[in-house]
Image (tube, one colour):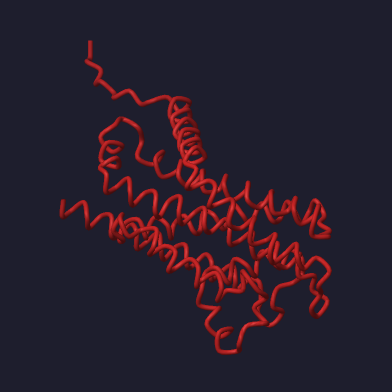
Length: 265
């Protein structure tokens, strides 16, 4: 009888799926229980929106409801913060502490580790946007249809994934002990210059000229387009191209840096 070659047994797809789900669950619970992370990532955009959005619930500028405009701006501010601090700072610290090496040595698929962090960033972004929307409707005089809210949630998922790629790149290149400060030095000016805190048309002209090179500008313009508040002089397609190009660039740079570090290890 002819011998039959042994075929390596593959892990059932269901088991792999459960690994991804469990890793995501534990990552989300860990971040939620880390008060310094969850309270600040959720609390800061909520506090700023109450101060600058809800406080201007009766203000209009060129037929733009300021509280509604700020809802889009601080939604982007919140989801970007969740991605950069959850992945950029968190991954940098885990890499420095050796936890990343422990994860790589385990039988868990490496993709599950990154997928869990990305999914947790998306979840925090959805929580932030839902809270801001509730505050806007309840206290800020914002009117929002279900279609607009659904579009906001969809853009939150897209934006969180895009900036998760930036967080991954930062985690690979910045030292863990300086990660929070460096991320803030990038995150806060980028948010201001993109018009996340105040309508971009209120900024000086020379600052407005800087905005189109920033990924946060493209994301907030897409978010504001849900309300019809985007800059009309620029097409929405260019914002999608800008955000997509930024994501591909940061993912490609992360892949190159990671491969080089493995070769030098």
